[in-house]
Amino acid sequence: MSIAHAINFFCLLGVDRDCVVEHSELFKAVSYSATEPLLAQGERQEFAFLISSGIVQACHYSAAGAIRAKEYYFSNELCLLYSHWLCNTASQYQLEALETVQAIRIPLQLLSLDPWQPALLQLLKQQLLYKEAKEQLLLLNTPQQRYLHLIEHSPLWIEQLNNLQIAHYIGISPISLSRIKSRMKRQQDKTSTPK
Image (tube, rainbow, N blue to C red; front, side, top):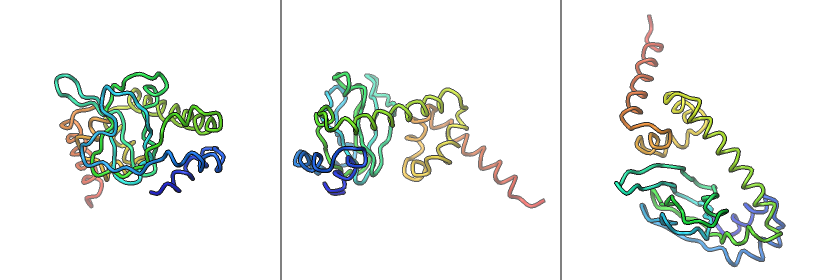
């Protein structure tokens, strides 16, 4: 992904092209290797990352070393922890590369400028809708229904994330996910076996 692609991304969110081009000198192409943090847990967020390639995870590491997956970001997605940025608080999550990641780093201070308000509003709307959908997924569905939802609505996740990552995201243990997949396979085998 080039700086030009990042310019188009913000133009599609409603920012005037001349304004984006003027500020694009602040954009920077960056690369991270697997497990390298884009934002360390406990730091304040100053940048958003428009992912060119690779996968980034937002996760929390507990003092005991347990990991909680909050989110995954893929190519052409803007990687940003909204609440920590809006409240200017230290991040409780770490943004880290799951594999080699190429991205365009964008200073978040731009979204505070008046000409950038259309992008800010669109991003906040998208985030609200996404959070409501995730909340509904986790609260109103069984673990198997959550997994089926990912298969139907996020096939890229199923293809590119491992079982541990998927299990963390849908709030179950990897063993539970393995049982769900085995049960689904048995059901599929029963329906596909000729009588």
